[in-house]
Length: 474
Ligand code: FAD
Ligand code: NAD
Image 1 (tube, protein in one colour):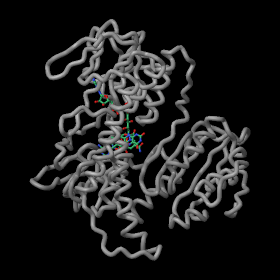
Image 2: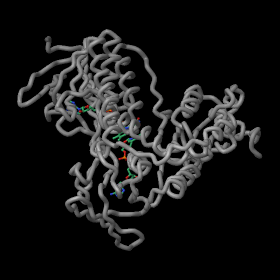
Image 3: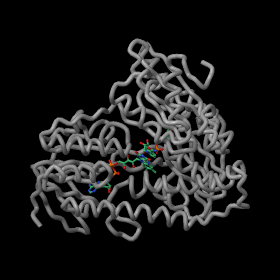
Image 4: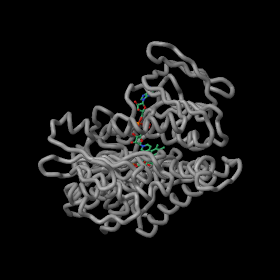
């Protein structure tokens, strides 16, 4: 094998593997270095997302949602199934099969695109060289261009050291093989809510300890309030805001957690404790000093808006750089850089990246929320429509949530769309497309939406911005 490539990508998560595929499509002789190994010690492509992130969490969210439906919703449809029992190891094995299927799929895509897959730790050296090390042996490769896509890892907090037996990070939390009677979670962010939901649906008593006084700060306040009510009052999760964990004591089969809330100290004992307090760029040991790679104040690779680092010919993308830590953001940056290298003039709109939280109902948003519109002093108008007034939603026994739209008063241009409701993850795409084309709410209102569909809630929310919803009083 030659040790010279047109492009070397370091990291095969959704940012890196997509960058490698697009580079290969554009005719570059491409290599991709990745060090991930699965539980059997075998290389596994796909990074955090495929191995211990997006995909396995959604597999468990789907399984657990089916349990919740069979336990609580079927009876509304006149279906009796008796007491629902859950085979957790089988559920976990199904999740593992999906992961294996997809990670080996990436290996297949690499082969089909003639991408050289290099297993080991990649380190940027001077003069656009990459050292790949494995088990004490290393080899140096060179490339015209290098793309760093090294991703992120969980932030750990000293008061709750992860052992992945009783105190778990996201990887451990996706492999719990029996339903904990009492589950504690530190952090009511995206992972805390998604994985808290999984085990809550399966029957755990879930307590989430969140340091901030606000719930889901980036989400539009009206929707986050409604979501908090649904997760606590309806679904029974105990979400404590303003709770600061001060100590954990690990016993044989349980963890005692001490926390302060409103100035008082409390303790609670859990069978498992998940720590989900955010993620940090995985930039440790990715570059030799002589390479001179600049990191930013948060330890991320410092890049400009074209994903260029301070070194000519070296780019960085995905969770390892500024911006939201989302798979689709990293993938799009991967495509962007590959096309820049090919001399094309690609475009990536960092202001139009959708977020989804896969709770039930789901939360999804794109663009700014009403609080941000206020802070920016914008002249804006809003519209909303509840799922409870939508026929398809009622047919599905989904009665909660709403779509809220924010638009510029003068131009009617859509500035943000926020959804708390069934299939929000799919519905948000219409908003992203609308905003990409600088659509107005009038454009959405004039677009014919099929009946009966959940998408009619988007249509009605757009009509509501102009005070002319058809199926609610304006
Ligand atoms: P990563 O996926 O972290 O991949 C980086 C890869 O680089 C890894 O394989 C790593 O082993 C490798 N690597 C690192 N350093 C080196 C090195 N020096 N040499 C060789 N290889 C190296 N995002 C969504 O958009 N939707 C979701 O539903 C979603 N769910 C999530 C659920 C969980 C539980 C978690 C933890 C994350 C979730 N995310 C989700 C976030 C998503 O996983 C990340 O945004 C995404 O994986 C980032 O992609 P990446 O390629 O930048 O990095
Ligand atoms: P997060 O930033 O979403 O949430 C972390 C939460 O922990 C915050 O609410 C924060 O206030 C709280 N917190 C921080 N320190 C704390 C402490 N000491 N005690 C109590 N609470 C504390 O982070 P996450 O949930 O770990 O997820 C990491 C990232 O992974 C997400 O931000 C997102 O980028 C990505 N992710 C995305 C999805 C998705 O797209 N559906 C799913 C999971 C993860």
